[in-house]
Amino acid sequence: GNATGIASFSVPYGHPTTAVFIWQRGDGPGKSDTIAIPVALPAAASKQLALSGVELASGMSKAGEQASPFDKAGFTLNPNPSAVFGENYTKLYYYAELYVPQGLIGSDEPAEVVTRVLDATGKEVLTSSQKVALKGAAMPVLSEIDLDGVAEDSYKLELRVKYEDAVQVEFQKPFFY
Image 1: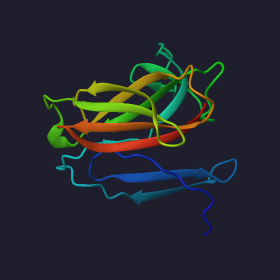
Image 2: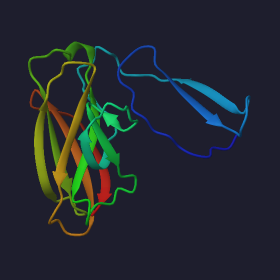
Image 3: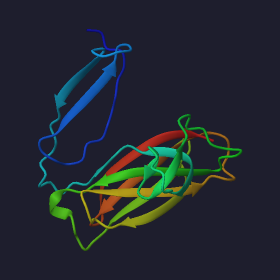
Image 4: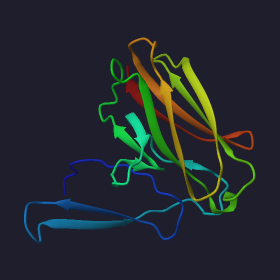
């Protein structure tokens, strides 16, 4: 058949792993289709950390008692699907997950996540870093960057994960100010 879209997603280490897609063809019973696709993953014994995609948000607050689909690691993120910041949104909040291979869970040494904002030429405009303890298979990476004062332009948010003084993985996501 014809492809009508493309989906991307991050999968933590685990075996067996299957991606399941469900789509609706109309109202009523029998109007949905399901497809299951096996996903091959790197060996779980690997020492390579992995990073999910990055979700951008225009606000963040402590999660309330009422569950929300925007709750992440005890916080509620207000999504910013347009990836445009400025005026009322001078802080960029983001969420990602650091996937930890089985052999590194519980390691005494944390991973360091270096966050950089790069302008259209690739020049670093802002930077920060945080330590992430490798306590489980998927660890939250949640932070904010104050964009007040940067020029109107297109930018990239870059997350670079270092472990044992080596860059393990990096991810870039474009946004606009």
